[in-house]
Length: 293
Image (cartoon, rainbow, N blue to C red):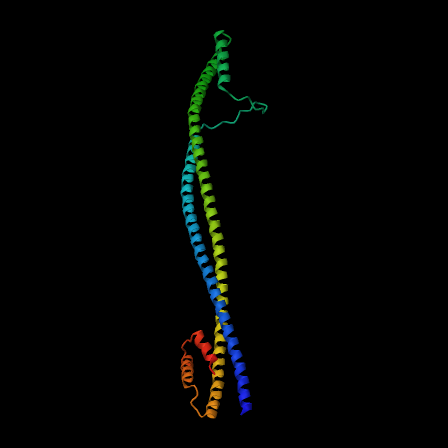
C-alpha cells in the first residue's frame, strides 16, 4: 500500500506541475491576445481615419475635375472666337497677285501707290507740254485713265487696311482671352492631379495599415488557439489530478473508516460538474480545484 501511495503522490505532483504549467501558459497567451486585440483595433481605427482622408481627397479631385471641364468649355469658346475672327479676316483680305516678271524673267519692282502717283504726274506733265501727239496721245490718255483707276482702288484698299487694323485688335483680344482660359485649365488640371496623387498616397497608407491590422488579427487567432489549447490541457490535467486525488481520498477513507472531509468533497464535485457541463469557471475556482487533495 505504501508503494501505491508513493506512486499516487508522484503522479499527483507531476500532474499538479503540469496543471500549473498549462494555466500559466494559458494566462500568458490570453495576455498576449489582449495585447494583440488592442493593437489590431488601433490599426483598424487608423485605417478608418485614412479612408476618410482618402475620401476627402477624392471629393477634392472630383471638384477640381469639374472645374477643369468648365474651364475647358470657356477655352473652347475662346478658341472658336479666335477661329471665326481669323476666317473673317482671311475672307475680307484681297488676294495678293504674284509680282509680274519682265521679259527676261526678272521680278519687277512691286507697284505702290507712290509709284502709280509718280507715273501719273509724269505722264500728265508730258501731255501738258505736248510731248505726246498723234496715236501716242490716245495711248497716254488710256494709260492715265488706268493709273487713275488703280490709284483710287489702292486708296480704297488702304482704307480697308485701316478697318482691318481694328479687326486685328479684336483678334489679339480674342487670343489673349484664349491664352488666359488655357492657363486656367492648366492650373485647374494641376490642382486636380495633385488631389489625385494625394488620394493615391492615402490609399497606399490605407492598404499598409489594413495589412498590419490583418497581420495582428492572424496573430490574434493563433494566440487564441494556443490559449484555448493550453486551457484544454489545463482542464485535462485537473481532471487527471482529481481522479488521483479521489483514489487517494478513497484509500484514506477506507483506512480511517470513512467520512473524511465531506463538505470539501461536495464542493469539488460541484465545481467539476460545472466544468464538465461546459460552464466557465473563474481563475480562482480553477486554482481552488487544483489545491484540493
